[in-house]
Image (cartoon, rainbow, N blue to C red; front, top):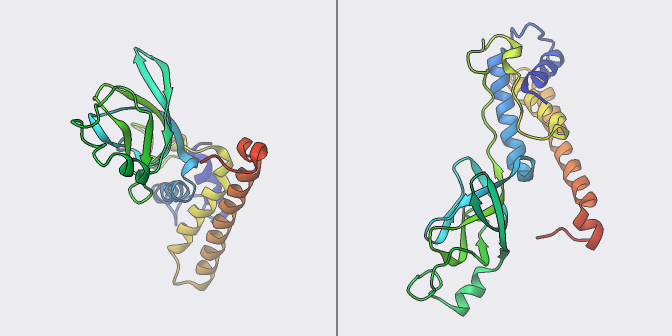
Length: 235
């Protein structure tokens, strides 16, 4: 689904088909907020499988457009445009590595290598992770990350006052379209929050947004192949 479709639906519900009270530029701003709120509440809504070049050492950083690491999959060799899969990488607890070898971050004690065997992730630092053994600076890994949605802007050279200029992809799958519309309307009605009617409508659309994401999260849980197979979600 494209941004222009959400903006068109929003203007219809707002009874502002001419984009007079809520301009296209303003709706695009609220739509951007909606996308980022969805990404914050449901990180996997903006998940992507990417290749991350590793730097020397144990400490690794996610690319600038990422908001959270979801999973490290495997080591890969990059050969031109192709990826050659290597060994899998499993998650471990930091406490286990610390107790077995307090010097595992130091290349003088644990030789850095091109391929990782384990990784450590700390929820309090979602943009950083650690690999063991530390990398020699030549490795690459395949990882699943949650990316920060791009701001909704007109296409290059497009007129910001023409709806077709916003024919750009949302960056999330279409099943989140209703939730994104609800949040866009919530922010739009907040503009007239001093008006009791508008404030009530804003609250209603935010409630619908929250409920929609909650229902979606529950549906993903019970329909997950991991859940159907084992009754648990893979960690």
